[in-house]
Image (cartoon, rainbow, N blue to C red; front, side, top):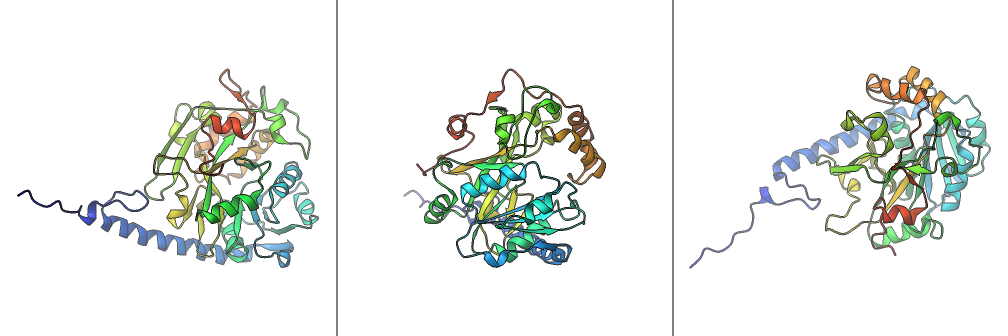
Length: 360
């Protein structure tokens, strides 16, 4: 009589998120992540005193209102379109941290009736690139609500975004018990030297930056936090061709049903708890996802690169990015024969850069 089939030993069973490490190792790592999350929240709370309110209209926040959080510096040219785009998407209130702007950004924001703005002269780098400040505002004003956390040069789009605003999207996510939406950060760029393009305040940046790299992307899953680590695009092709592993990561989780216990770890690339990073389907299907149109390469990138090279505030090891900044200061032409012209979300879906998932 053949022996009965025994169930797999607990140490060999994968976790619900697909992590196949032995359960003692998973348990120890879960403990460490809880401790890290508590540390991040403690940092955020301690740094709340670095923020000075310039226009605090959070008394107008109501349940169900979608909130947008961002840290900005000298973004007066981008903000008119940014605000218009996200208002049309259904954002009800904007919460900004301004880090020592000198171009009128604070006055622009303070004059908007649906904007609250805080200022700080403190180090962007030492605040974990602004995330300590935003984690505090998310804890204070985001818990229990859908929150969108983006940079001023990121324009979120998703399937059917022109006709289905964010409240429709978040209602679908709620109905399907999906707590977060993942997105690919897609670099847009012009044809010709970067400093030759022309962009007016309020103009759609995609009109000035109509090109992108369509197919040179690689991804792998990070076991520690469960996120997709995506690299490629024009920055990997142009600035990190010799060392592609140094290229910026492009996967983000910008839209989250927030809870006061949550915290962003590294920009909006990763969060804690770990499960919030698992925005891609694991069953062979496709999960609903969006794209952040990254408009970094407007003509202002050339003088800003010179400034940021001197400030050394944007990377944990700024010396590694000396060549990157030097290349941008020379205003290169990023276009190549394989560049694709941006034609809207359906084109991006056909290329596999975003997915409707079950949202049809």
